[in-house]
Image 1 (cartoon, rainbow, N blue to C red):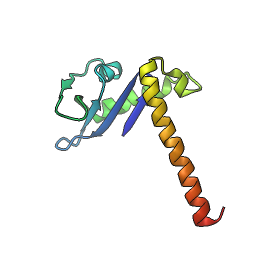
Image 2: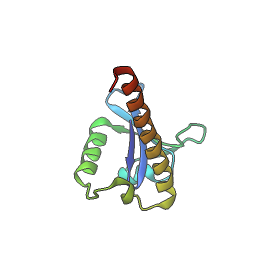
Image 3: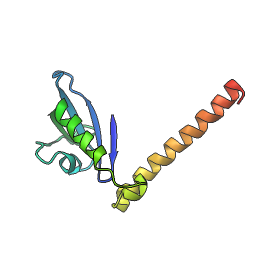
Image 4: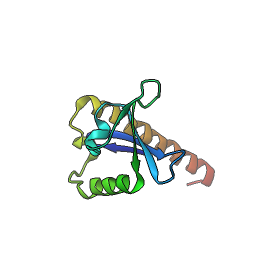
Length: 113
């Protein structure tokens, strides 16, 4: 699962050996600690996500639930204060916008509407 937050981007996947744990990964230093301040983050430069930690599923679930409860913006893109991060997020937004357009064109051709 990819999680885009105003101040961090996380990839969260099941731990291969520990079913009650999740592997939380980030590409940017500090992104994990922004959401999980007490996490012991490991630097793994040989991996595609250089930063990672293992956390209990319930802890990750609880923190993501809090993130949802704390939403105060009415436009996600405008909530991203870091211009550098905003540029990358905007490219992701554009990619998914294009995906939606392609899907609609495919649906129109396939179903005639």
